[in-house]
Length: 133
Image (cartoon, rainbow, N blue to C red):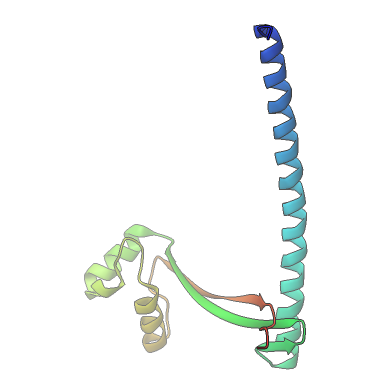
């Protein structure tokens, strides 16, 4: 077997690397397009559920359901920490803020602690139908 020229090997390597990059970019573009469609479908399902006053749709094709998750983040660390320290709400303090403690504070005081962002996000999940035995 004849030994390959280094120039030929390097040229082949670069062509393969370029082809790989093109395929990866194509897949990224395809996935981005699919993700945009999924977001629009989730938005449609969320709007329909809200309009119909339901929390799920069970069909032969699968079930779409709404779920809520809380989030809390610090908008102004100095203000949040000063508030936590002054009022001894140490249960709110973790490496971030404790969303359960923040929610409890909001529910009892009807106010968001200073320096903290809090909200709930409604998400849509879709499951395949369960297989019947």
